Every structure is written in structure tokens, then in C-alpha cells.
Amino acid sequence: MYPNDGFRELEQQECLRLLTKVPVGRIVHTRQALPAVLPVNFCVDVDGAVVLRTSADSELVRAVDGAVVAFEADEVDAQVHSGWSVVVTGPAAVVTDPAERDRLARTGPSSWAPSPREVFVRIEPELVTGRELVAGRTMYGVKLPG
Image (tube, rainbow, N blue to C red):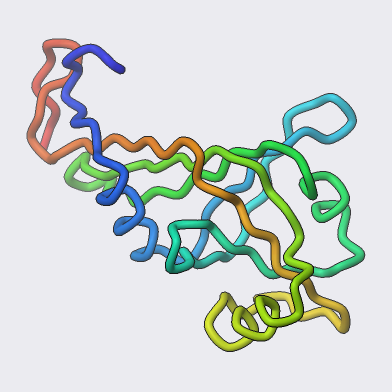
């Protein structure tokens, strides 16, 4: 996908594994015809879906329910110039099945900003991509400090 610029493409399973290492990512959606990005805490479900927990009355829920969104998370070490980034793209939907809601209440993410009425939002992983930069690699022909 990218030229040989010091990055390594990641396989889907590796991307999903890396997502489980970090507690916060960013959901990318459209708000009033403009791109919007919000940091959210999340978890990766057993089927690879990204799951968020948020207020049922939030603007986010209204914006993403039924829409295709992107979700990005990363981990970067600025000292050694290494890290990774994963993007999950797919349809988002509020979980309405009572059994699924009960399961996610036990196994899903906890809300960092609890609300009296919370819902779970699932992002189905139709496209999962990722890149990794390893310390000491070169980028654009220039040796990175490290």
C-alpha cells in the first residue's frame, strides 16, 4: 500500500492484537458534513469488532449509528522513533439486542465518563489496516536518530 519508506505493513490479526494493548483510540465520523474525530476508550470484541460505551443521548451516537466510520489507535515512542498505527473501517451500530447488551456490560469497555443511560456501539471491521515503524529504520533515505 505504501512505498518502502521504513514502515512495515501489518496483517489484520496483528492489527487486532495491537489494539488490545491500548485503552484509547479515535473515532472518525462525519458531523454536519465535516470530518470529526473524538478520542474514546474501547475494547476489541471476540469477533474483532471495536466496541465503545457512551451516553445514549450523545451527539456521537446520533452521528455514527448506521454510518460507516473509521477508528484509529496507535502507540508511539518518540524517544526511539518507533510505533504503530491501526485503522478499522466499517459500519457502526448501537447494540440493541438485550442479550448482547448484557454480555457487553460484563465484558465490554467501562465508561470513563459514566452516564445514567449508556449504550454500546459496535464498529464492524470491514477493513483493517496498520503500519509499524521500527526504531532505527530509515525513512525517505534518511537514517532516523535513535
